[in-house]
Length: 419
Ligand code: DSN
Image 1 (cartoon, rainbow, N blue to C red):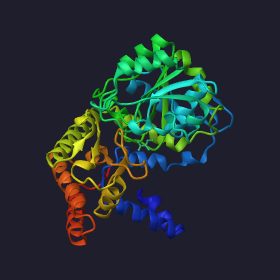
Image 2 (spheres, rainbow, N blue to C red):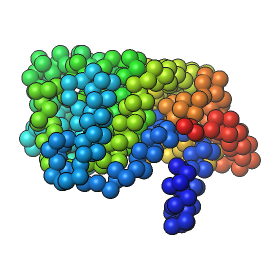
Image 3 (tube, rainbow, N blue to C red):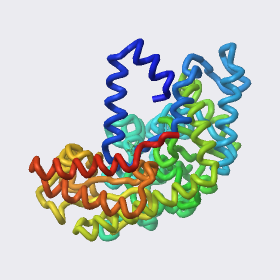
């Protein structure tokens, strides 16, 4: 933790401080393979812990509902300018508290209740805000899901087009939270144009790859691009919406006052820092290493007999089908065994999974956080080996202890970012 803040917290509330210290130790001593998580820089954490948390700033720069907003305007304008430059976008709203809030604002901006939305099924890699029944999106709108094909386990654009022409959605959503392959934003835009829909790209997972030119950008193709700022982008937890100038007022209105109140200005300050980091040349190298590491990890797992959904990965994540190597092991059990050995993953449905979402037959693995620690291809081979041995060990305490010792040693060699 930032030193003087940590001292102050330790003195004023040792109980909370003790929990934070335990979490810092957990993060230091475990291998973080959750594809949507990362370790931010000290600069991002410092901004996030700054006095900006004290301020209400409802409205936008130059049009606030409270006095004393001069520095709020400066920081929000800076975040906006950096975001627009980084993504080559005409307009950005940096106020969404999260990706879910960003998506909500877009829906409110373009849809009426019961309008039709075409989006990727959660069970095939989508996201709960893209129309899951128990989410507001699945309750408010008529969702037509598209999925991946059984043989390729990839989205077939001809099938998306057929569904779009049949159902005439008002909004098409592309983007995913568990899809290891490149998304064809240009083809989605063509389909949206053909059926008169608007197009929203949710790039939360791949935002960092996009700014580094390692994945095609959605910005020229989609009417609205939503993202989180804390995954491959390596910023604080939060969201952003990009759109063309013609839709700027509409999007801004549906963030505030439409769906949010006061913006989290400390988070916007931290977003500005992260966007500044992403504008530096070394960010591209970092993103390249994320992708190289994902391929190395995927290959090492495949060589140990694991089947990867769609056969591999184009981006920062992969879906591992456990059934080849461990037919009776659920993703839930595997997640628990791995955590006990210090390897943190999340269970995940694989396409056409016969197990429930609470059990699953797969795991989702990603490399952004390990890459942040400086790990490269040789470490990915070690990680695959540790993961394989931890799963083979099952409940065997002795083997698990040995694996767990090696995990700690690897973590010691690659400490969390100190700057
Ligand atoms: N929960 C995030 C993820 O893990 O991908 C998506 O919002």
